Structures are given as structure tokens and as C-alpha cells.
Length: 406
Image (cartoon, rainbow, N blue to C red; front, side, top):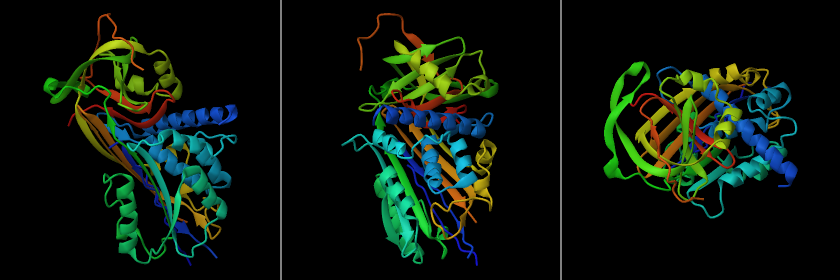
């Protein structure tokens, strides 16, 4: 008799929420640690750019949270074994020396003590009396700081309400009704939730009175009238014959909104084809403080994706078949992924940036004095790539491209 196990991951002012729905078919800091953490960030960014290329579609805006989906898949990887685990390790760019406890450093790095504007919260909701492996429980608790709750999934409405209230609280009211009673059935055994909350105000706000209408040139030189925010600021900046690159910092955070603006004669495709950890690392290393006179669009994006095919293309295949091995979660039977959905939202305005992302995986069987040099002119009036990242660790939290104000 087939039974089902549902496991959900929720990662989400920046808010990021990732959800993984997992349906189970049942039949009968030392130097080395620092090095591993650095490797984990490189792995995250390599994964980010590869998924970006899979999702990029000509003439369309793009926005998602690679951190959200990466952490969700990593938590699934904690219960994977055999060839299934190898595929997770390949797609997540992990090696055998990558210790899962390195995620502690990732989470702690994103959760500065006492900082209420950047919070990661994790929880595991387990059907009462349903046995899961102690090792998996311990790893989730110690490596992801997750709480473990007992819940009665047979009461679908109250179970959905309980989880939604937790998500609502952990995202400070930004994510509502992430799960409905229809997402829970009599075979639901586990729900894993992970939320990321971030509310980033600019270190130096844009003056709203300076926001003016201007033309944005989309692919094919189609123009759209849109609001452009303007300011002059002393920022980390670099440029070459292909592009301009600038990072706009958030107040009280190590995170910045970084924009890659192709030169007028350079196509987006040629820049996107180069995206990699090494490419980003080179841009960050060549930055220096410059006075930048900028004009960037004020925009909101809402996106949604199904990630099964992109992840298949990247090499995660067994996990979607009956050959999947997730016995590290429970020895009661097999786990296989049915599909993965991801939704994201970002609002860039004069005061701050708000961002959110939701993924669903269904599984079956220091400022310096301003420079006196001439200001660099940065006018983002044509398609560009943008990232919200920690410029010190180079960790990408959100990534996207803006190609069309519509």
C-alpha cells in the first residue's frame, strides 16, 4: 500500500521563503572550517549562476533566491543516500570534504546577533508518533538551528493555520497563507519550514524629489516610460569595455544591491554566458571607491517558476524517479521529487529594498572622503543583471535581471 510523506521547506522586507513539498512512497571555526565555509559560498554562487542560466528567457525579467532554493535542497540532501546523494552533491557543488555543519556558519553569518532586520528561522513539523531518523533530527537541529514540532496533519485546517502562523511570525507578516488545507492529506508526515527575513534600507537614500520619468530601452530598442531614481554617492565601482559594475550598500548591513550593466554595444547574452563565481570574484576584486552619478529604475518584480526541468538539466535526475534514495529521513520507504515551484518578489524604491522568494518541491515514491575626480556616470536605462549579496563573503542571496519595466 502506497503512503505519502510531505516535507516542506520555507525560506523567506528581504524576505525569502522556500517551500519544499516532499511526498514519500512507502513500500512494506579554525582555518580548515573557514576554508570549508569559503568553499560552501563558492558552491552556492556556482549553483546560483547555473540555475540563473537555466531560468533566463529572452526578453523576460528574472528574479529568484538561489540561497532559498539552495538551503531547501541542502536540507533534502541531509536525508539522501547513495547515487541520489551524489547528484545532490554535484548540483550543489559540494565535495566529500564539505561538512554539513558548515551551514551553521552560513546561518550565523546571516543572523547577526541582535539584528532584527535579518533573520533565518527553521522548523520541522512531524506527524505525531511518526518515526524519523534520529541522525536527521539531530542534523536539522544542530546545523540549521531548526525547531522540531509535533503536529496532527489529520486536522488539515488547524495544521495549515499553525504552520502559516509560524511563517507569518518569522517573516514579520510578509508571507501569508503559504500552505493550504489542500496541500495536506491523510498521508502527510513531515513539513519542514525555513524562512529568511531581511529589510534593507539604503545607507544613503534616494531623494524622492529627484525621481523622474525616463525611457528604458528594452531588447529590440523598444522604449517604456518608467521612474528613474537618481543620486550621486561614493561607491564601490569598476568598469571595462564590456560593462559597468556598482554596489549600493544597505544601512547597517554588509549586503549591497550590485548591478552589472552591459555597455551599450554589449548584449546581455554575452555577459550572462560569462556568469560564474570566478567572474563575480574578478569584478569584486577590481572595484574601488568612485563618485558615481547614477540613475536606476524604481521597480517591482513578481516571478514564478517550476524548477523540475531546470534541475533535471543541471543533473538532479534520480531524485525525481523511483530510484531515489531518501532513507536518511526515514527508513519507512522511498522518497522521490515530483516537482519544484519557486515564486519571488522584489520592490526597489528610494528608501529600501524588499524581496521575497518561495520554492516548492514536491517529492513522490567603511566610507572614505568623496573623490574629487570626475563622477562616473551610471545610467541603467537598458537591460541589466542585479544581485543582492554580501560583498565581503560574496554570498548571493537574490539574483535577477531587469529587461522590461512592463
